[in-house]
Amino acid sequence: MRFLLAAVNAKYIHSNPAVYSLRAYAERFCAVPSTGSVSSGGAAQADIEIAEYTINQPFWEILADLYGKKPDAVGFSCYIWNREIVFGLIRELSKVLPHVPIWLGGPEVSYDPEETLSALPSAAGVMIGEGEETFRELVDLYASALLSVPEFSAEPAGISVKAPDSSEETPAWPLPDQIRGIAYRTRPGGMVKRTPERQAVPLDEIPFFYEERKEITDFQDRIIYYESSRGCPYRCSYCLSSIDKTVRFRNVELVKKELQFFLDEKVPQVKFVDRTFNCSHSHAMEIWSYIREHDNGVTNFHFEIAADILTEEELALLRSLRPGLVQLEIGVQSTNPDTLKEIRRTADWERLKKIVERVREGRNIHIHLDLIAGLPLEDMESFQRSFNDVYSCRPDQLQLGFLKVLKGSHMHEKAAEYGIAYTDFPPYEVLFTRWISYADILTLKRVEEMVELYYNSAQFTHTLPVLERCFSSPFEMYRELEDFYDRRGLFRQSPSRMYRYQALLEFALQAAPEKEELWRQLLTLDLYLRENAKSRPDFAPPFRQKEEAKEKISRFYREEEKNPRFLAEYVQDGYDSRQMARMTHVECFGLPVWEESGKIREEAGNDGASRYFVLFDYRNRNPLNREAKLVILSL
Image 1 (cartoon, rainbow, N blue to C red):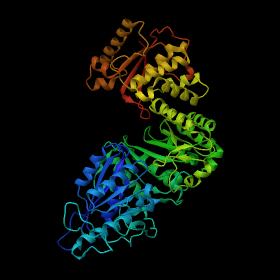
Image 2: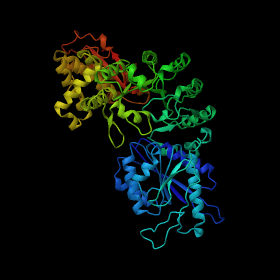
Image 3: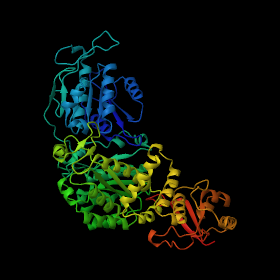
C-alpha cells in the first residue's frame, strides 16, 4: 500500500517537517511493517512516500508528478500560503485518480473541516490538529483494507469507484469512523461526519525523523526545522497557538542527543519552531548551555523568544556565545500599550527595549524584531511611533508584517467589531480597519518593500544612519523613499541590486545635495564591505590623485607578499601580490566614513583627496552581517 504525503512549500529552501514527522511516527508505530507491498505471509505492508514541491512550480508539472507516483492514497499538508494551489491540485487529481482517497491536514483546514470538505467534494477527509497518531491509524486502516481486497465489495459502508482506464471496480475503502480527530465523508460526495477529539501525543514519542532515515543530505541548502516544544502559554488574539494554552516539552536529554546529530553533521542552520522558546527558563538554559559547550563553529541556531522575560542568568549565557551561534526572533508587534492590551499581549515594551539593547551590546547575536500593521486601536500615527520605537533598537532585521485574520483565532471572532476587512482568500490579510485606511495599508506595503531592500538587506549599514538625520524620523525617511520609488516607476521596474545604490544616491542628493561627496563615499564603503566589485561603480567618487594612489596600493601588495602584516593567511596559502589584489580590495576615501555615523567629520576631505586607504578582506567576514573585515592602512 503506497500512501503519498505531499507538501507544497513557499520556497525551495523551506522544508515541511510535518510530513516527515507523520511518516516517521507511522513507520515506527504502525501495526503493519513499511517495506512497500503486501507480504506473502498475510501481513499488510505500507510504503509512505514524501513529495515536496513549491508554490512557484508550474501547476501541471506538480499534477503530473503526483499522478506518476501512482499512490493508493494521498495526504496534503495545507497552510495559508499553499491553500489555493493545494485545493486546485486536489480537484484535478481526483479526476485522473478517482479511486484514490485524498486527505488534508494542517492549520489551514483544521478549524473548519466541514467547510473544507464542502469546497472539495472529492476529498475523503481532514485530519484535525496534530496528526501523528491519526495518520498512523489511517495508514493501518488502508493497508489492512488492501490486504483483504477479496472481501471487499461496493457496499454503502465503503467508498468505491471505477477508474477511467479500467472496467473493474476498485477496492472499497473502509470508513475511518473509529479514528479520532478527523472529519470524513461516508461516500464520495456524501455527508461529512466528525469523530471525537484526539488526545495529544507525548512529544517524546515522536521520532527524530532526520536521523531515523539518515536523510540529512536531502536537506542540503534547505532550512532544518526542529521542535522541542508544542503550544504557547500566551493568548495573543491573532495567533492560532492561543487556542491551546498548554505547552508540552520534549525531554531535554533527548533534545541534546538530537541537536548533537545536527552539530556532528555541521548543518548551517537549525531553526527551532517552538512558539516561545524561553517560556521555560530551565528548558532554555539547558539547551543554550549545551549548544555553547558543543559549538562546532559552523552551525547557527534560530529561536523565537519573548525578550521581556529573559532573566539575568539567560542574558549572561547569551552574552557568552560565539558570534553567529544564535539568532533571536522577537515579536514586538506594536509599542502602543492600548493595542497590546487589546490583542492580549503581556509584553512590557520598555523592559523589552532595554533587554534588546543589552543583547545588542554583546555584538554576538543576530536580532530580528517583528511589527504587525493593521492591529486594533493602531492608526497610522500610532504605527509610525511603533515603527520608530522598534527601529531605534537597531535590529539586524525589522520585519514589517500585516495582520492575518486566521480562522479559529480570537481576532477572527472580533473582526466585525474592529471593522477589519480582509481578503476572502489566503492569507486573509487586512485591507483596512476602523483605525487605518486601505490607502494607508498601501503606503505601508511600499514602506515595507523599502525596508526590505535597504535596511534588511544589510547592504547600506553606513549610509542609512547618516541619511536618517535629514528627516524627522526613520519612518518619514522610508515613506519619502517609497514615494521617490513610486514617482520614478521603480516599483514596476524591479531595479537591480547595483541600481539600488544609484537610486539611493539620487534620493540622498534630493535630501541634502551639499553632501554629495559624503553620500558617494558612504555608498562606496557599503558596496565594498559586501562584495569585491570587479569594476568601480558609477556612484563612487572619482580619484583626484589616481596615479599616486594606484602606486601606493600596488606597493602595499608587493610588501605584503614579502613581509605580510595583514594578509598572512593568503601568503601561507601561496598567493602572490597580484592574486591577493584580486581577492581583496583597497579603496581610497577622503572621509572616515567607517566610523560611527555621529562621529564622521564631514568638514574634512570634501575635496575628494585620498586621505585614507582601506583594505577589505573578504576571507574574513563578520559572522552576523557578513561584512568584510576592514583595516585602515597607513600608505
